[in-house]
Length: 478
Image (tube, rainbow, N blue to C red; front, top):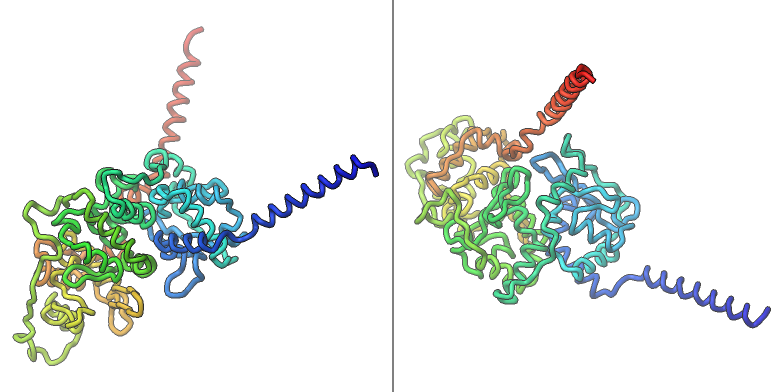
């Protein structure tokens, strides 16, 4: 073997060795600090709430959680590093594109139930940390999650490309130089990671967030995500920063509000685990947002938590009936005393330690829109914070007595509103039926059954018009 050949072979072997070393290094886990940062970011982004089945029914991030959107049921995907069922084959660039532009590895479009419209603000550094965590800090689960199958035409995922062109503001978060570092930290936490606007902003006819109405409140199924701008009447302007921090950490503030529905999930899975400094930053940000007044709140109106007072007729009613037979309970007052007073007290004042909260000075009963009062009666409250489990039974499906009817729930709600809350609000039997069915359907969902017939009719019309035009063209001379 010549010296030249020996040098070439040695160089080739060294090059191959270098490639193998590089590949091995690529397979190595990133620094533990980066993985832990990603874990903290995943908590702040509340990934667990949607991508894990509740009540210990599924493994972390294995998907399958059903999101009841107005357009149909959307199932959260498996985002573990499984190469067969999850995102194990995603490169960091593909992960970032899914997270911030809503485009999967195979090119299919995600629905904005995955809040990429908020995550698009995430920095490159935080996106890299999230990638490191999901690839190296999460156990792979090789089980396929349930597949989303929306009705036509919402099942045409490519249509989301047009929706994104119209509504996706694909920009990273930029600090506001006129604000403090703490305010900007809160804006990033609430906007990019916590995606608060996804629930707390009203939607337009095409289900995109309404411009100029950020955090002014929106319906999420049967629940109202209330106005959380700094307005003193409609929003949280009357809350102190300390009260906001307490609510975010525990889900309750005596004399103000209690978290239920999706907000209870956010507190349980995300907010209670954030550092105190982050919660304080979110409070500072919310207190510094542009105030937006609800149309239902006239000038001089009271904030929701200021309504109501204790009231009871128990003393005059005690002993007037031989026993507490549910069939004998017909009025809202009777139904309240039969079903609610044992926890919330006959006066509506709640328990002494407020584990069962007061029904007056309570945003659920003081808001002009009583949706959360109805939803709480129907679906209950279930929230775990630390070692405390807050549980109110759902009255749409009681196991020990017949569930309450729509009329009975409306009667209870109206009694509570008149005696303890905003007496200008009212609940009809139809309102309860809509809430029981999952909430009011937007125009887009209402139009869905007519879309295919309309498209077919339009196509037929085009064919007829084209046929008439061709016939006339053939008859023309020369």
